[in-house]
Image (cartoon, rainbow, N blue to C red):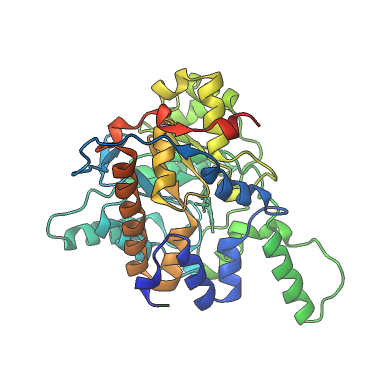
Length: 381
Ligand code: FNR
């Protein structure tokens, strides 16, 4: 379909499905187990409603937001997603060029198809190409290698490349069960005549399915099931910048993150790709508001999962989020249209956000308040 027919962020999925190889689309779209976590992520945003105010002079609206002091025109950033080379030949640089042209921040995955150095180089070049520069900054998503020496080595690369913050993914001690990937593997095996049941090779699936072919770093080898809160102590010695724990899913861990000196938490269930029937980020945010609201004032709060409309973003901000991550829509946009699709996806969300703010009765994101949403339906569960 023509790019102009992508009117909502969800439309990019249809476009990507139509053009991507089945294996690539499966990698992007798969979720864990029966798919319930992903479905809840998508549904929960629609289960809370706004409480709009009227007659408030909403002629001019300002959607700017800061992440650790780095201003962006938008309160959403592109979530880290591995192996973009499986989705578009231009891989991460293609995605980042689109983000830079629009000024959106990006969190770069450890499992990227390109090296951090290549990604940074493309970022700097694109910045240089723009007459007035771009507010875009890159942050780094860190899968902690099992080997401490390798972990420190990776961190020094991240430091020397100039990433502005470390998003440590903590919801992935092992890969979740990626059901669609399993069907695909079984179909591929059947096609070449291997019909006997085998679970060999499952470990290497998921986020890692494309890594060897794309020159990316193998992920499963890097995931460490042994990580504990104590690891934050040596990480803090090696990394002076902001630390965000990606994948916090309950109030107790939000509090621990604060006690261990993290600068932010990202409420996430990994796009429904990890624990079966994990809470949506919205549920976790409501839990934190109820049981440890002090965390909201102390840490920067991010969340992701199932955000498909600028109004979802607005709801998250009303409930206390600093900014939110959007994942698959950008990946699908990249797959179907490359850089132009990424730019369009930013525009779609930004326009919905602006309209939402006006209809809600606010002109700047500082005016977002919890009483602007009614979450009683979700709270009563
Ligand atoms: C991811 N996600 C992810 N997270 C992470 O910390 N490191 C990674 O390498 C990846 N890779 C990855 C690949 C693909 C194809 C997807 C869809 C997701 C999770 C991602 O950062 C984010 O948490 C979710 O994608 C957010 O949900 P939505 O917006 O995709 O619904």
